[in-house]
Length: 298
Image (cartoon, rainbow, N blue to C red; front, side, top):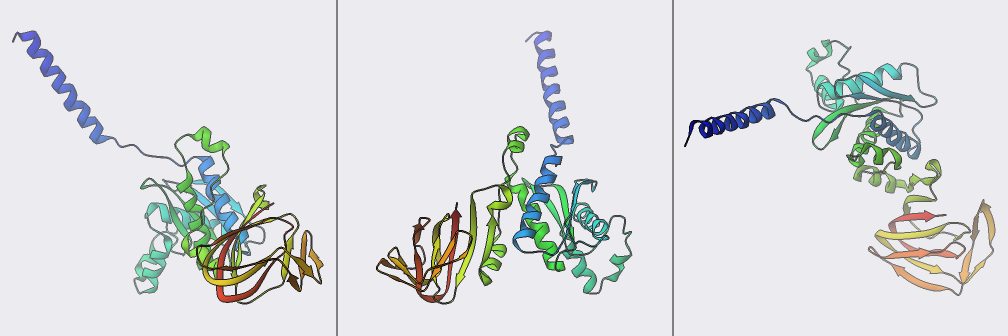
């Protein structure tokens, strides 16, 4: 092998070593954009509306703890802004939910409370925003109904990152994806509540986490089609027929005492049913708690 070929092999090998060394010294880091920060706030705000939070300040910081976006809901006390920023910054800089530090201090390690409050706010309600295993920011909430609800709003905001895509142009033009954790849906089924209100986002649908403990009135929704999916319990449902003693109870809503005629079905977990708008339906008998999702399409 001549000297030129040997030199070429040595240079190629050196280049591979240098490239490998450079690659080891540099890592790819995802960054939270302003659009992403706004999505985090929108998700937290939606959760606040759905769960009737009396207020709240939602702050989003980047991976360095720098404020990117902040929104103060009506009725929130003035100091909430600084507190929420502190929670978000603490969650990012220490890479843990702030409740961890509140619990540590409450268990006796009070020395942690002496850390400078410029970057340490050990109060429940701060959550890291994570994408593909990387912490890309933090969200902090203050001023909701309780410390626990502060954290719930922050979790809802941070969970919005699960819908972030790689194409900033495509994700900017698309509406945000709504995500509800098991804890949120379980809480909805405790009393029965609206899980998602499409009217707030210009959508033509709503999602209910519905609960029945007993029979109800005959219902007719003149504009809404109900799509049901049963999770727990059983019920006897009559659809169609003629409604007795019908009267309007709200816009586009009619209620009645009972149904004559119609079709009778027994609904059990796993069953699904579509009730078109204008069709009377009656949960005549219920073995509760009867839990079911309802998607209302207008």
